[in-house]
Image 1 (spheres, one colour):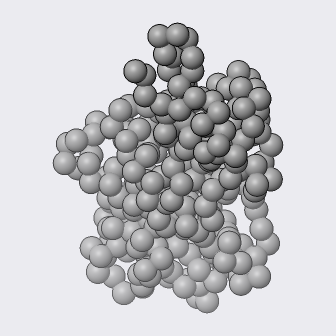
Image 2: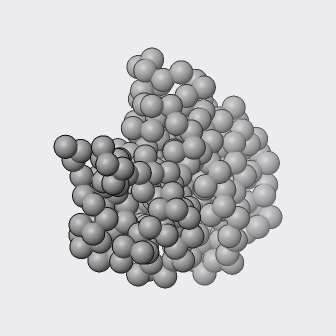
Length: 267
């Protein structure tokens, strides 16, 4: 006998009328039932989870089409907690599914607070991906797949400029430093904390970043260092220079200080 629930049982479990379930299945392909020998549909616990996930999104104000697009294909069991999302993204990395990685990142931002997504999903994700690459468990191409999926989503958030009430901060990666995702996350977090952020991105000459910080009367110039050495930093009056990232501990100059926020995000 084929295991699973018939549509009446699925309706009782989820509180969604059978006619609505049939419509969702036909129009949005959100369910993936099996068939009995007699041709009757049988639904799995994954189908139950997907319907319940959609109902949660509808209660939050999403339209069914929007929620279905966010949910993705019927093969995917939706994640709910931040830990679920992190593990789901890592599973997608293991199975080599670029589209699923992007979808899951989109889901994370839709379902969780931005700060929670940055700190509990993306920051641990990037650390794990970096460690796997160092251990030889991921190729450069596979690491780039994850990085680009995250970068495209962070870019949308960075495009939302704000004036800032706390002051101005200029953020840049050190010369030769191409790892910018942590710095992008820091920029988003600072904007949410009330700062006006000028984001310069990867491989920025320090003299240029310092001159721009001076012209903008910035309070802080943040420099991200992951893999490249920084031997000296510019000196600026009235501008605090902050060095952050995994490579910051190797700096022996006296002009910068490290902060936990940059050390956490600029990875």
